Every structure is written in C-alpha cells, then in structure tokens.
Image (cartoon, rainbow, N blue to C red; front, side):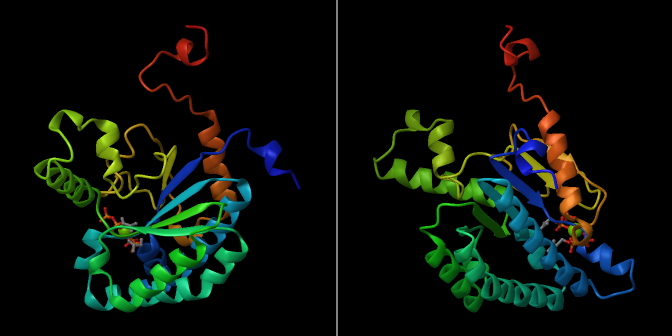
Length: 248
Ligand code: IPE
Ligand code: IPE
Ligand code: MG
C-alpha cells in the first residue's frame, strides 16, 4: 500500500465537511430516513479515523444546523439519540487516538442529556494534542456572527473595547471558532452546491469541493479523491499566480 506521505504532498490543516444526503441515500433504498442517518454515523467514524491518520489538524463536521430543528419532531428526536449514542460509544476511542473533541453552535437548544455527554467528551479529551474534531451542532453562521456582534457591543458598552479596536482579528476572536485556523478545504456531499449557513465568516478563502456521493457512500477512496483535488488547487488570496509561485 502506498504510504500517505507519498500519496499526499499536502493535506489541509483544517478540513470542514457538510455531511449531506443521508435522507436521499435511504429513500433510494426504500428505507426510513433514520437508517440513512445511522449509516451516516458509520461514515463519520471512518472519516474521523482516516483524517486523524493523515495528519489533518482540524476536522469540523456540520452535523445539525440551527435550521434542522424545523424538521419533523420524530427525525429530530432520532438524530439527537443517534448523536448521544455516537458520543457515548466514541469517547474512549477519541482518548486512545489522542483526538481533542469540541462542539460549536447554540448549546442551550440541545437536550440536557446530549449536552452532558458532549461536555464530558470535551472535558476528557481537552488535553489531547492530536486532531481537533469539532461537531457543529444546532449551528448557524449568521446566528454565530450576530452573537459575536452582541458580545462586542457589550464590551464596548462596558468601556473595555473601543469601536476603533474592532477589526477582522478582533471580530474573529468573538466567534465560536476563535482558537482555530479558517478551513482550508470544504467538502459537501450529495451534489448540493450551497453553504447552508455554515461557517460564513471562516469560509472566505476556503477551497470548495462538491461530490455527488451521498454521505453514507462517502468512503476512504472518496476522501482521498477529494484530497487529491485539494493538492492541485492554487490558493492565491487575491494575488497573481506568479506572485504565489514566488516569481512576482
Ligand atoms: C444530512 O443528511 C444530515 C443532516 C442534515 C442532519 P440529510 O438528512 O440532509 O439528507 P437529505 O439531504 O435529506 O438527503
Ligand atoms: C446542512 O444540510 C446541514 C447539515 C449537513 C447538518 P441540510 O440538508 O439541512 O441543508 P439544506 O437545508 O438542504 O440546505
Ligand atoms: Mg440535506
């Protein structure tokens, strides 16, 4: 087998994924949507393990959006139960694999028992030095940005910050992701080509990748295919290609 070192000259430091298509995967097989979500959890386990093996420093998974609360109650309930079982079953593996676990999103909306297990997993893995695995739960980027603006307003009203002091770096410091680099690469599965209120601020210069595969079918080969694409992207950040190549 080819070693990872030879297969990938560079991997993203921060990979973000919009895991989409569980429902359609199930529907195509005349199964209930929740079966698709169950299969999706298996994909999560695979992808987490492989990203950690590849030396990716940050993996951020969009698992449940602020807007997903408006799905049928039975589906929301089933998703919360799946989430709880995933955390309960995987916390030990995170400890063994040196993975640091954390959550971003609107915490108060999550059921207390789910929150308890999420907090416990975050606590016991806080000192780990390997990959940081972030689950975006009850997460919406506009809500996150509005919350940051509110907190900044409180600081200014309290005289601890001046309006002139609010620049990009200050603002980023008030977001849920304040201690993470911006994503280098975003993958969305299931053929949808939209951001769906995910990391709007942080994705400003992220390379985007869309695949037709539904999330339950997103296997190791698909991940590798995406990462090969990433390697070929030239990130210019507004400059010219020659400048980026050091010939400018
Ligand atoms: C992604 O799959 C999982 C969540 C959003 C929770 P979907 O449930 O959105 O699957 P589709 O888009 O209906 O196929
Ligand atoms: C985005 O998927 C949210 C997650 C993957 C958790 P959706 O399936 O909810 O997105 P839309 O509503 O189709 O844009
Ligand atoms: Mg969807």
